[in-house]
Image (cartoon, rainbow, N blue to C red; front, side, top):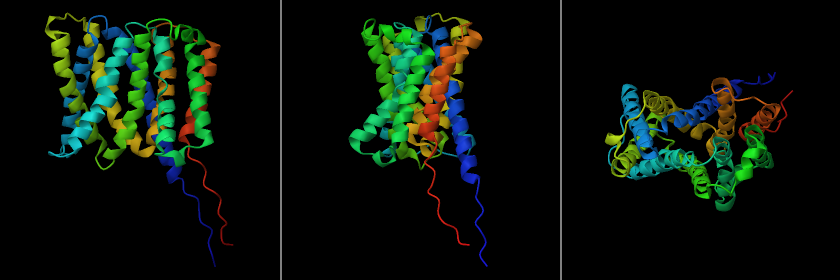
Length: 312
């Protein structure tokens, strides 16, 4: 007598958890735009990023040790950590912070929502992961980008290429870094997420602290208390906590699925602006967020397995 196999929900439960973490990560990184706006008037970009990654590195190293992990000794992994720290934090954080000094936050949000498109283009050009690129994911990327444009407002695109082109290029450069970072980060799949995050942030701090000391002389600054609190929030929540989640998602959702959070990040930025900055929530914003959600679902939900016949 044969018994019929019972369906398991473990895979669905795991996917639900990962999508929940993607939502959390998007919310955290969506709030970073507000915190940067608070800090940037009195803490310049290099100093802000140096403080952000240094505090995060110290916290992550302490967490890793508390979990019983040790950072790798000398070896080829450390140059790889330096590249990860540069792509994921040092360079894009600086480019975005500087860019927001010169362009509207809405336009910056649209430009910074493009990493999935870069990931898709890289996969198609290099052949890496091309077999995982389906028409549904391509449609998902298009839906997400359209949703961002609708959410932020099409008017924000009217200044594209006409004002502060260098600042616009800087934010696009940050998006390219965010696309390359999860692809590069796949090589750390054998390390715990806290170890990878600690190594990458430690290397980012080594890169940024000398740059800040030379270029901005932070000892001469007089930041406001609100700016200091904003930088601490950026370091603890938007960097340390976010990086642990991020390196987990690289392993579970892959580069394209992880970068799809950039669409959600733009939507959360609008929602946070409505909640705390008194910005008006429009029907176009609701429509845009619906498109964003549809795009993320199309990118992250795996293709259903083909039904196989069961023995009677």
